[in-house]
Amino acid sequence: MKTAVLSDLAFAAPRLRTDAIRWTIVLLATELLLVNSPSTVLLVAVPETLALIQALAIDEERCSWNRLRLALPITRAEAVAARFAVAALVAAGAIALTAGTNLLVAALFAAVPTLGEIAILPTAATGIDTTTLALCCCASMSLALVAAGIVLPLIAWRGSTLGASLAMCALSMFSLLLAINARPPLPAPPALLAAGLLAVAAIWFIASAALATRIFSRREL
Image 1 (tube, rainbow, N blue to C red):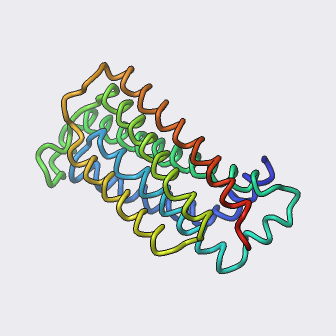
Image 2: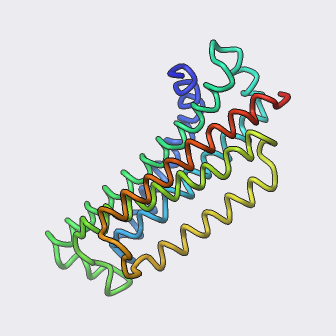
């Protein structure tokens, strides 16, 4: 399992570095000029996780990486588990990057009030809201796990197909709409709601990994 995860991370490293730089620039511009809100966390995790999954699938098919990876001392089940683990790590990393940027910009607005004058929107500086930020992080992680749990079995079944790509686009758009409308009344206390979201998403993610393992074990490479 460790070998499979490390091989996937090594394969994805160049793209991850590029994406991290790109998203940092986009996030800083968004938080400084438009809105410094915890809901920006929802903008990154799902699209970034799905973009990496799709990019890896396309790259794998182009260079027959699946066959090369299975030449390593790993089983097909470990290869699938590694892909799910990498997807979860990417989602967690994207969330950490976004949350860190949000807190950094909020601290800058608090320390230098005149900084808000560069913002395009007058509501750019919303202050530090750790409760909402923590809830948005949990919601974003849950969405990323659910989205990966939908797309990865499709890729395990047919590879990077039009259907998988359309599913990724639809899920990314859903996370964008959720980020734009991220302030509905909460149906439960934030901590309980966050725990429930993560629990349901984790169960879905594990069940999806089991399904993808069965599918990939029967696939001709």
